[in-house]
Amino acid sequence: MTRVLVLNGPNLNLLGTREPHIYGRTTLAEIEDGLREQASRLGLEVDFYQSNHEGALIDRLQRRDFDWAIVNAGGLTHTSVSLRDCLNGIDRPFIEVHLSDPDSREQFRRVNYLRDIAAASIVGKGAAGYSMALDEIGRRAALPPRTPGKPA
Image (tube, rainbow, N blue to C red):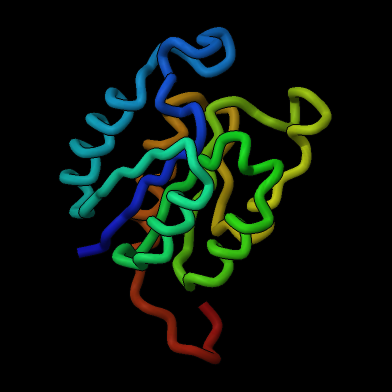
């Protein structure tokens, strides 16, 4: 069974109440409940982790007890070379998710240390972005494994 880690960074514990005009009114707990149900239907195992501390997120990723990750790094997307280095070094694919579209917001949010190493990026879809990411992982997990050196 494919194991998926859903990793959420700083301030995402405030979803539903923090700037709902930008991030929506859906809470992180509601997102997690929906993903649990969806993962069951897709035959995926899902685990969740949220922290406001960069090192705790890195420590969680370094456990490598998952096959795929869905990562919403929050503000760390724009600042954390350390998180990028970890994601690049653990040899696990991930899909980057952002509730809003950082490229349509303040200039500083256009810096993204994760996009170019992510298997995919889903931005600006609100809470539905997590579900879209899980669907994509389910689709990719169902594909036959690739033979190294042979085209897909």
